[in-house]
Amino acid sequence: MRSTMRTSWQRMALVLTMGVVATFGLGQPLPPAVTAQSVIVVDWKTGKVLYEKNADARRYPASTTKIMTALLALENLGPTTVLTAPSNIERVSGSSMYLKPGEQVSVDALLHGLMLRSANDGAEMLAVKMGGSLPGFARMMNQKALTLGCRGTRFVTPHGLPNDNHYTTARDLAKIASAAMHYPRFAEIVKTPSVTILRSMNLENTYLESTNSLLEEDTRVVGIKTGWTNAAGRCFVGASEQCDTTIITVILKSEKWQDDQIALMNWVDENFTPRAMVAEGDALGTVPLSGGWSDRVRVTTTGDKVLAWSGGEFEFSPLPKEAIKAPVKKGDRIGDVTVRLGTDEWIMPLLAAEDQAAKPMWAVMLTSPWTGAAMLGGVAGFVAVRRKPRRRRTVKRAAVSGVRPVRPASGGSGGRQRSVTRIHRW
Image (cartoon, rainbow, N blue to C red):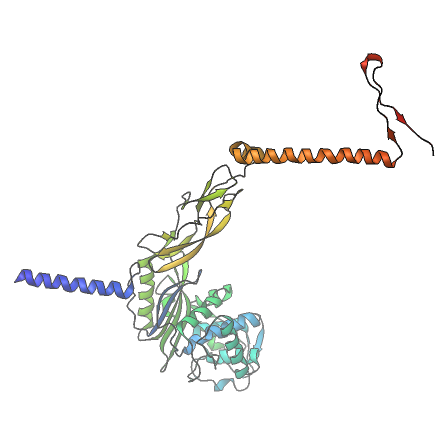
């Protein structure tokens, strides 16, 4: 009885295991457990997607919208530029810097208010300065989104307050955040837990504290922006320093964004590591070589490390069968090679792993009898052909110039013959 039960459990375990393999594929880590409805995890340095869940579904971004507003401000306004708050600035609802009409604040201070306190009034102040109006700035936002390759995004506001026509996707937000992180000032601002800014009015509101609580709770976290509305749920676009790279995460419509972010970071640490596809000095094999001392040349690929799944071994596509022509120097790119690890794939440069000089003419003749015989025959024929025209030209020139060659007389001292030329005066 027990044996039968044990066999049944074993069969069930096997079925479940096969189901997991069929669902997630061989050579791919199991997905992280998160509450968010849309998620994406990207290696910032390469753009490689490590994990995604409903990454192209349209979602309300809430205040993560402000990443785009900050990106455009960095591109269009100098950080020391001073802006003056409009007379209607206090009408802006939601999270705020509590700007006052006529208050003068630098762009850098507004960016801190935007990204740390999530100031909606600061977002509108920057937007009107750049776009002339909120609709004008929305057009700038949407044009920039298209430039970055965002196909599921439409912006209406600079701050993300509720609007049915204001939406994006996890994939698009990752692209926007990745672009913003290329600005050192942006990266510096979003990793700041708190700061005191300069302003001309409302001096009791100079201290700003980031809404990103993980900045002080987890040393891996270096940004970027939280967001929340009833319609959007809990949202977070994160940046973390892991595995010798920067990981960009997007979490949309989450129940607990902090738990989701920690789960994603732990998942990356547990399943990925920087790996070199080829050990230094190793070769992938050889490819045919023509015109060299050897008929083959060793090849390899770059020794740079890539963020890859920790398990399994790299697999390489077949090497080229067509011969490359000598000379070849070590490091020369002679083609591409496809590298696979589980479900991941890279196109890598195929490089010569050694120098291979071309053979000189004499070496070709010595090492190839047929080629040498053909070349010698060609040279002999060329010499024979070249000799005959020279004689004809000599005779012809003599006739034209009036010089008549005379056959030398036989005999003479020493048995030598002399050549006599008669010159006629006309």
